[in-house]
Amino acid sequence: MITDDELCRKVIEVLAQEFELDPEEMVPEATLYDDLGLDSLDAVDMVVVLEKTFGMKVTDEAALRSIRTVDDLMQFVIRLRAEQSRA
Amino acid sequence: MVLNRVVITGRGAVSPFGLGVERLVENLWAGNSAVCVMEEWRGIEGLKSCIAAPVPPFDYKSLLPRTVRRSMGKMAIYANLATMEAVRDAGIDDELLKSGKTGAAIGSTTGSPAVYEKFYARYLPNNAFEGIKSGEFFKMMGHTCTANVCLALGIRGEQWAPVSACTSSSQAVGLGYLLVQTGRQEVVLCGGSEETHASVTGVFDLLRAASYRNDDPESACRPFDTGRDGVVCGGGSGILVLENYEHAKTRGAKIYGEIVGFGNVNDAGHIANPDKDSMVRAMKNAMDEAGLRAEDIDYVNAHATGTELGDVAEAAAIGVAVDSSTPVSSFKGHLGHTLGASGTLELIGVLEMMERGEILPTRNLEDVDPRCADARLETEKRKAEIRTVLKNNFALGGVNTSLAITKVNL
Image (tube, rainbow over all chains, first blue to last red; front, top):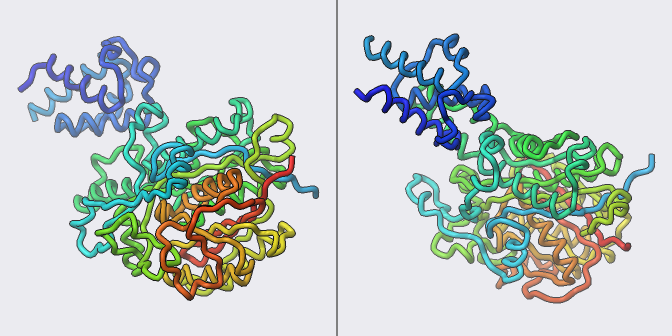
């Protein structure tokens, strides 16, 4: 299984590609909406991309809605992987 | 009610010859054909027509930011780039564009067929919506081109999407003409857009109306020629800026022509077969509205797609509505049939003919079908004063349109 760091790098890579973002700008404190310019439609597609890339199921809508920054997203993905690999 | 005069002040194109009006015009004048073999279609069972005139690939990512492009399929991208060129050409500034005085009327046969394919390829075999992205609907919806143009360019006026297959863009121009004439808008960005796809050519193939000249693509579309065997579908987008004449004059805009009549009728007879009398009514209505007689018409740009039924009916209709001495040609031999974009892409060529004083012949017309003898069909490029034209476009579903356009005396 890949490490958390590798997982985070992969998240940056697929999202940078999907949303045509500069990976350099995707620092942990960057906000997805204001700093990176994503919106609610992009958030839906972000889930599609993450589910496809990592074979996860994202069902916790409340947790998803609470994501503000790149770091929030990383913690969310790390937690999700841990939960789903235990299952 | 005093009606405003309506003029054309801008042109934009994405055509089977590539990006921009200049490339379209250069290739038309060089007598080139954009039709090529579609190798990837050869494996489709039952599809016998494997030729088309697609827009050549280009780097659209560098031309439109992702934030607006994410809801666009190919046809909406074409419509946006053509509209941006038309707006630049007309010299419409940002203030006018976003003032609410400018509207848009841009049609297409359907939403993006490539996106439909992708959507249903995911949905149907799996009976599942998982994995489908949020933007797909916005690329598939019937008004995808006009909605995306309004969003990308900040157009806040009237938004329309005439959807009538091969008359989508001629109806868009007719609608824009009415909107400006009645003063609802000062400017309307009008046209249509289309993308090539096997399913689109397949529709014509199912109707036994597509060309099977797969071994000779550039000669495949042969309007009015005895050797013709059907339609070759093309893609692209043509956009015209329609404007209130007084408004255009005040701001010193270049005027390409004035729209003086619009005939738009249904034959109410057959869903697919062309109807000569209905074509006559469309042309007559356009001429009557403009107060034009047959001798006033210097040139007719025919719809003529290269089908036996359509070409013969249209030649006969021109003979009745106009006469047998007015020059006639079609651009389908060069461009194939760009369907919802054909009206405006071809009109751009017609406006150029008016400006240059030259008539272009129908490409691939070598042996005129004697049943088309009621129309004077041009086979050579030649000089001619062209002041007043008719532009015909017809569509499956019984639709017949004709636009009457004149030069403007300044």
